[in-house]
Image (cartoon, rainbow, N blue to C red):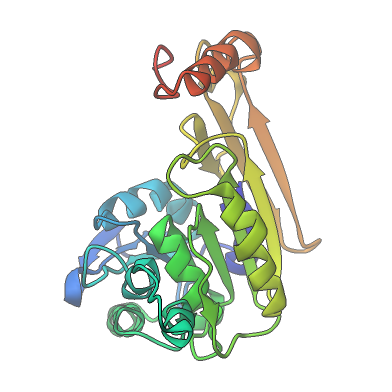
Length: 291
């Protein structure tokens, strides 16, 4: 759902292309997905992984949408186990240095930010993309880093998407008016929902971001939500399951999105939701007994 909102920054009419969809390896472990539908100077979606380097998985989640809309996907990799600014912010506070603590949660640039920009440049030499329609997105630690880097005036992004961010890192020179979309599960056991509501979103607003915040009833991820993009879902796709399928069409002439969501009303609408809620109450995997 959050990605659908950001597509207003990416939307274009796909143009015929002579090449087939392809995965491309880039320097510093970055990978890119170029769909067959990508026209000349296509929009770009940069995807930042969470802790643990899962950039291939980030691409897999978005390939269907990339195919439908001619969007090039790029998944850079952090040098360490996670993004450097996030690791610095996670360090225990220094008891005798308030200045050091403040600097640890302030973004002025970083080596990993340079790696992201280098990956974009390397991709551009193979497939020139439209930087005016580039969106920076991230999940978990990648969401925290995306907000810090993506709000910086020195990094040109049309919008920023953050799925389940965890730490408020202030940007020294923010780009006022930049579109930012944030989503977080109210029952996230890993990164606190209260931090997003009480610290991250207000910080972004104070930096002049145009923030849209979409909370959802779930944990760190939304396990039973499937995004189908421009292929609008039908009831038969979710019959006898606990899934909610969401699809959308972008109307660029009226600057709006038409969204369709489908569920099985006896499972997701009743019995399945009851089992899912029971799992959450008992501290079990939400998917237990439902997949």
